[in-house]
Image (tube, rainbow, N blue to C red; front, side):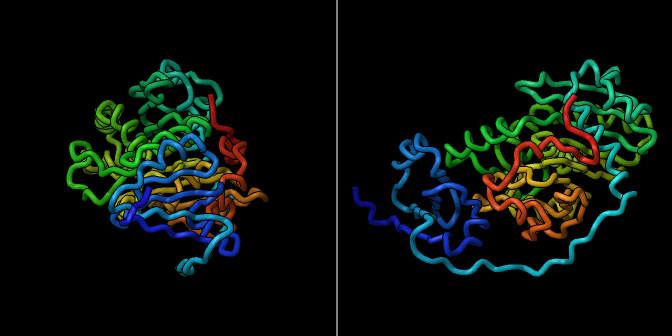
Length: 357
């Protein structure tokens, strides 16, 4: 079949490994599909079923970009000069530990977090006063809200998921050209530009609990006179916490918001990352060769906000300035593709804490 309006581009990424890293190519052949200069789909080389199902997508106005390991050449990738990477002090590392336990506690049953009797995770923050909890751990992730006197902050925590389920969510969306990135729901995110886009799967999960969490946070602020709200989560829970960090300040004034996340996947596009940088204090902590923080790929239009802290193989914690820092001391440079990663690093340890109840 002939496609007169389709153009094919082939790139040799054996010679241009920087292109493979920047596009997150981890299998061959990997096919990128564009329409009107916008990425609308891709077919990973290791997914033959998707390849067969998707080859008929090529219609008038599409440009198909095949990134292969043994073909032509590509233009250089522009490298932006960044601030220097710096090591965290022992006291700085220790300051995150209460939030690490809060994030880990989100894996516990809602009945236990509401009673705050979830074992070691709860005992680590023994003065915590729960307000509400919810979720079923299946169709809706566990969550809880309460107040921490020792941190002088409302805490909002979201349950994560295992890496295989995270990857399944990403792959499920990858089979639908319309389900990669979507503008945020204007009813939940009033006034946010339509150019600010998030992963549709993460956005849909967030919408399930948004109103209940908003109500719980408002009640907690009122009950304790709180002036700060801290959002925590690991894995999928980290993505939900970040979306809460965009959502809640649009409905609550007079308090400051910060997010501390662990093993967080990319959540939105460049405009989303820029919005987060401008509106939220964020620290996202990545452990060694964890694969989750490098998906979804940058070649699909996803970008991490600033605020990365990377735990290196020698257990040193370093601050990585900017968005998606490509230094080998940071997660993007250290794990250029999923085959160079280690799924076992996803749950930790984060300063001695393994995620889970």
